Amino acid sequence: MNETLIRDEIVEAIDDIRRPPGHLVAASMSAVRAERSRHTNPNFASAAAVLITAAVIAVLVVASTLRHAANSRPATQPRIGGSVCSIPVRTDQGPGFVELPSGLFRPAGLPAASATAYNPATHKWLPTDPQGVSPDGKIVALLDNAKGHNQTLRLETSTGTLLYMRINVMRILGWSSDGSLMITTVDFPARLLKIAADGRHAEWIDPVGNETTMWSFARGQYVWGVALPYQDPDQHREVVRLDLATNSVSDWYAMLPDSFNDTGYGPILGLSSDGYPIVPQLKTNSRSAIYVIRSKDAPTPVYVSSGDEMTPNLFWPEDASDGKSGLMITTTDGELYASLDSTGLSLVQVPNSVRVYSFAAGCT
Amino acid sequence: MGSAGEQLLIAKAKQGNDLAYEQLLASLVEPAHRLACGLLHDTHLAEDAVQEAAVKGWRKLKNLKDGVPIQPWFLGIVVNQCRDMQRGHWSRHVMKREVVEPTESADDSAIRRMEVRRLLELLSRQERLVIVLRFYVDLPWADVAAIAGLTEAGARARFYRGLAKVRPKDPAAVTA
Image (cartoon, rainbow over all chains, first blue to last red):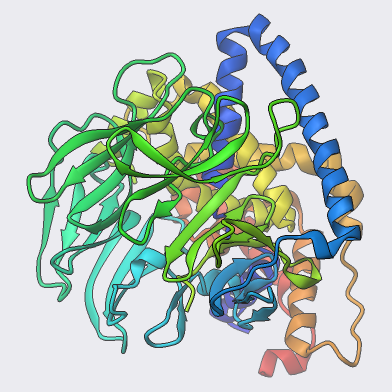
């Protein structure tokens, strides 16, 4: 057996047990911030730790009680009705489709690492982020992260013709109004790279008024990101918007203190169907909520968790998808929430304990 | 990466800018998780190892010399973290977890993958480390040697010695 074959065997053997770590950056940063808080103010931190531990225990007890109650009374769960669709997802059991409203999971039977996005136009699973598929599905930006160096981007037609290739890609952001692909790179993290859909030219964009921004999503005329606009000991973050017509960056929304962004979740989960950022945030009464920020400094709540100040019902969003079938959210616990009718977000009961972590495309 | 862009982010992160550190982590977690999974053979333990390494990396970032690329340095922290976890948990739990017991219903390729994992677990720590770094994280020999704390020649020697132990013993498999 030659070296290439044994290499393939070893890669397959480890791939067999590995789930790509979609949420690991957020979880790691949450741990980093907790560490920093402990060092910044040890007395406060120890007191806070006691309080947080007590709160977590209380929440777990309440959640467990509620879950038990829900399991024993399934008829009282809010029913999801309305339109029927099938959403491609990444789960702990590999990629597949969740049928709505039934919640039935249909595995795609593909390795998790090579099937992270779905192109509804060609019905193909692809190794990329969902925003790597162009709006019409004719161009796809694939990511190869199997190498030890940084991700390699391949811009291809949906039939596999290579248009453009680049190493050191940090993130695929999405597609601009003129059909160009927007990405960030590790070579120049403060800039954005705009690649024409035919792959024939690419231009750097230097955002004006940008300090340290992590760019998250692009659609149409705007690119959305999160910035640290000023020296703040608590490092509260600001959602910012880059206008591709002028390359200027403007503040859009200052995340509230004690919001999810301070625990590493988010802040931008995705874009709404009309192109605005969807962010999770703790409310002042400790309940969790999801907002769409369609106007500067004016977030619109699209979901507020149940519970009250003493027994908040927290959930920790991981991914969002919004389209014709309404808003859908996944949580770090692998729960899927969908809003397929007028009652708002409801938990979808996916049989066989399938944990849904993120979306591979919108619901079709 | 090792680029000017990376050095800019490292400089900002050293000043306490956690968004800069998050951007650095964004390109580190994938190879780090591959490495941890290759060493621990458990995707969830691997996530724990990377998360802990991220905290230690943040704490020790000031020790990273100017101009030095962050990836080999960070992967070195991941290796140490995996070693600590193996001492405390893995050797008691995970090593006993997977026993290859072929059944009529299991397909041959799945059995072979389990067998390969079992053979990897039987290697010495450094043999397994250099094989995972070279084959699964796909690093150049210089980085493999630096992370493993070996010379390049030493890393290659352990690599080929380990590889010989993972090759199938079944003559039919050799000709396949």
